[in-house]
Image (cartoon, rainbow, N blue to C red; front, side, top):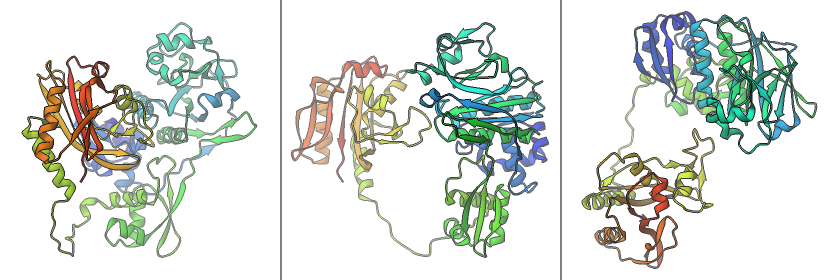
Amino acid sequence: MPIITLQYDDMEKLTRADKDTIIDRVPMIGADIERVEEESIDIEFFPDRPDLYSVEGVARAMRGFLDIEKGLCEYEVTPSDVEITLDEEIANIRPVLGCAVVRGVCFDENSIKSLMDLQEDLHWGLGRDRKKVSIGVHDMENIKAPFRYVAADPDFEFIPLDFTEPMSMRDILEKHPKGVGFAHLVEGFDKYPLILDANDNVLSFPPIINGNLTRVEESTTELFIDVTGLADAVYTALNIVVTALAERGGKVESVKLTYPDGSMKILPDLAPRVHKVTRSEVDSLIGIDLPMDEIVAQLEKMRFGIRKIDGDTLEVEIPSYRADILNIDDIIEDIAIGYGYDNIVPDFPKSSTVGRAHEISLARTAMREIMVGLGYSEVMPFTLTSEKIHFDWMCRNKTDDVTPVLHPISEDQNMLRTTILPNLMEILSLNQHRELPQRIFEVGEVVVNNNNGRHLAAVSIHPQANFTEVRELVDAMMRERMVDYEVVESQDTAFLEGRRADILVNGEKIGVMGEFYPEVVTNFGLGQPVVGFEIDIKV
């Protein structure tokens, strides 16, 4: 999660509250204080609130939360004569574009740092490390509209940011630090995205690097902002950036985008989205009876616009910069935050019941006792993983029983695991500095074809690890469970041929065991033999 540094003098000026009040109340809007310094405070904000990734966004939220300024923040967007056209070929490379102009900005050391930090935090939080969204901020003094968003030849040259000599786009990907770091985002394309002005000056090579001509400095007063990407998150990122600049006194102007088919779009669109909320829905979800006036007060406190439709229904205007409000539940959550969770009095259940352990819990407990008794230590890795680790590093073919994550926050966590062994191998790779032997296990959840299951898996690493060890381990474990089993030759490519076996109970395959294939061991950076097994626990 991003950690934002707030300078006290800057925060006090924007919030119009003293630093002690801010420090005391800011955790209540969804944040953890990391460090309190003499002149600043470091705060970690939850990733679902990218609008709080800047001092301007925090100040806007805190003014409402402290009852200094309530209700919807409305930002005027003035029409301008700035236009940008999109090349037809760009639709197959990086198709989504959002633009805006902000004039009258007065930068100082704090505000320019806040803008740059916001840009990078949005690249991570909304942009999936620039893949989904990337942002360019440009000084307009040395460029001239109209602009063009084109697909350019890799040999096209310009001076990239922080360099003094021209480089081709191909060379930037091979030699510039930013190019090397993000070259994979344009890998496989014959042409690369480029934003040019009327005189063919380069604004940016998204999502890689800006041109040096448009470098933003403290003397900059007029900005052109481009946001490119693959989805509608582009427009949310654009709104967050321009409203943060508007909080600094900047005047937002629109840009006309013209597409190859002749259609047009005017951006930024800062109009609020509208949802209806009823009092009964609020009471049902929060669990307390709140008067309608109280609900209105808390929504205004959280910077929503409100219009009463009748005695039970409200029309709620959602700010354009709030990426986290997806449905009515999110609105009601903000009502609870505004009201204060500490003000909700706990209430004992009115029914009295007697509980007992679930069969699944009993089975897991039994498994843990057996494995600990056999000298293994329990671990609890994430159930999220990636195809690279789950299949490629395990030398297994991809299967169609995987449940992918719709909006992963990183490429390392883009699917739900179907087996546990890859996670255990990861843990071994992270603990190579520990002495051997290492023997670990997990009793945990897997998801196969969108259905939850429970597996037991264990691995052992040391110089003498072999098939005999894992066969003896499975024998002891199954004997303790009083389960008869048999083994047959396995075809699992994660294990060495001739040193692997499928585990069968009543003729049905429930697991596999063996010595891991050398390439699997190497893929995880391990230097010693590894053996392991995994079984499906039937409860």
